[in-house]
Length: 113
Length: 113
Image 1 (tube, helix red, strand yellow):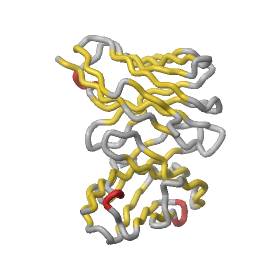
Image 2 (cartoon, chains in turn blue, purple):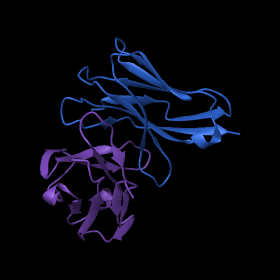
Image 3 (cartoon, chains in turn yellow, brown):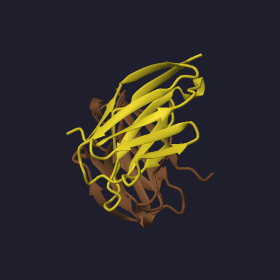
Image 4 (cartoon, chains in turn red, brown):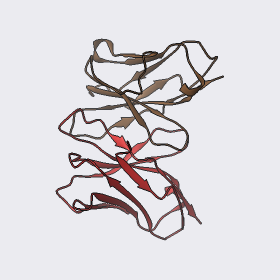
């Protein structure tokens, strides 16, 4: 059972463009939605996270948009740079429980110079 | 070094052999997680410790897998009678409590030949 569905699987964006990655979740008990960035040979690193009581969170060039009624959330990377080329994972968890994080299948992002 | 440390970084073993991986979490983190990641997929939850207590195990964790966290510090993950399907990246993560996202280590890449 895939509780967090992520799309697209891969994405190519020109330098300076906007990268958009989408996720949908099924379990309405989820109340914490992080995004992780992973470079080859490294573990995932927390990029930005949102709770369902807000519709948007921005940190630098990274923005999460959250739509609770649609059970969807997305990551926007503004002014995308070659250094942003990595695999991005959306995730979800229930902070009230063991906080086990469920990950999406990932999006491989390539930024072309 | 205040990060999560995993050893070894790489392990090649013959099918049927036993292997053991070690994770040293961030010292003040009382929660420790093991995940498995195969190529092109997101991390899959295996098991979770709060201090020395193993509180949850995934159905992915067959009886050939065992994890321990003696004294609530480092953790070990052992795989007995390895199979080719066990080939994956094994990731360890830690967190202070439910309010925080995980910090992942760089993982142990297991190859079963």
